Length: 483
Image (tube, rainbow, N blue to C red):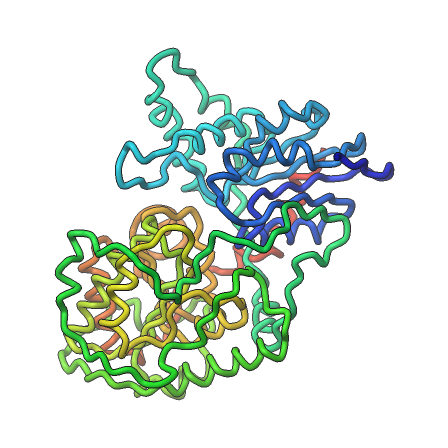
C-alpha cells in the first residue's frame, strides 16, 4: 500500500536502491544537509537485481505528494522505468548521480556482458534533467562509449544519443568524510545509525546479504593460468598466534552497536599492528628510491608511531578493495609473492569485502604470505579500517575498473603513499610519481620501498585531499536542488 506525504513545504525526494558503501555515504550527507528531504532506500545487496527491478518496487513504495520538487537518485536505478510507472514524478527536476558506469565494465568474455545494466543507465540519462558524475573519467568514458556499446543491437540503432545527453552532464567529485570526523570516529566509534534520521523510509529491511565475509574459508576454484606457477612457491607455513587480526563476519556496513566490544576490537587491532613480530629476512640488495620518495608537501598524515619506528619496522603494504575480478587481485598477489621470494621485509594487510564471486587467488595466496599478514579480510567497523590504514605505509591499487577510488583516497588521508595504475581515473587524481604502467614497475617500486621504508614514511603524496571534502563540494551538491 502506498502512503501519502503530509502537505507542507516543498520536499526533495532522495532515492538510493543500493544503500551501502559510498552510495550510503553520499545520500546521507545530502539528507543531513538539506531540510525537508524524503529518503527512500533499499538494502545494499545483489546490485544486479537492484539495477533490473528496483524501479517497480520503488514505484509501489514511494509515497505520493504534490510537494515534491526535485528527485535525486544514483545510476543503479532505472529512472526511465520509475517515471513511466509513476507519472506524478515526471514533472520533477530529476538528478542522477553516477558512482560508476556499466558501459566500460571489464568482462572476461564478451558474451558475459549484460547489456541491460548499461542500457538502463543510458535510458536514465535521457530522462534525467541533470546527469552528474564523480569524475571526468567517468563522464568521458560513458559518453564516448555509448555508440560502441549499442552497436550490439542488430539493426534500427538509435542515433545522436551522446549529443542529447552531454549538455546535461557535469562533474562533482564524490565527497570524502571530514578528516576531523574520521579521527573522532577512530577514537570513539559510534553505534550503527542505520535508521537514525527522521523522514526516512527504509525499504526491504531484511538482515540477509549476499556478502560473504572475506576472511572465511570457502571452497574456491584454482588460480588462472597466469598464476599457476605462484602456487608452487615454497613458504614457511609456521603461524604465530594472533597473527591474523580480528576476523569479523558481521554484514553491516556501519559500526557495531556494542560500543564496548567495538573498542576492545579496535584496541586489539592497534596492539597487534604495532607489536606484530617480523619473522622475515631483510633484503640486503641495494636499490634506489624514486625521486618522489623524498619529496615533501601533500596533505597526508604521518603518525608519531611511524616516525618512531621508521628505521626498524618493515614496510606495511595495504590492498583495500572489493574481492572481485575487476580489482585484479591476481596482479597484486603476483607482485607481493615476488617480493616474498626475494626475501623482502614487509607486512601485509588485505582488506575489503567478498560478495558472490569466489576468487581462488585469495585462498591460494594466503598460506604463502602468512608470515607477512597483519590483517586479512573485511572489517565491519570504519574505525578499525582507519586504524589499519594509519599504520600502513603504502596503499596499492591494481584495479581494472575504477571511477573514483574512495578507499585509496582514504588511505592517503591516513598517511599512506598511493601506488596506482596509470589508467582509469587515477591520472586525474594522482601525480605521475604515484602511477605505474606495468606490474613489473609496481614490483620494483615496492621492492625499493621494502629496502628503505624510512624514506617513504618521511614523505607524503602530493594529492590535494581538501578538494574532495564535503565542505568543498557541499555547495555544488546543494545547487542540484535549486529549481
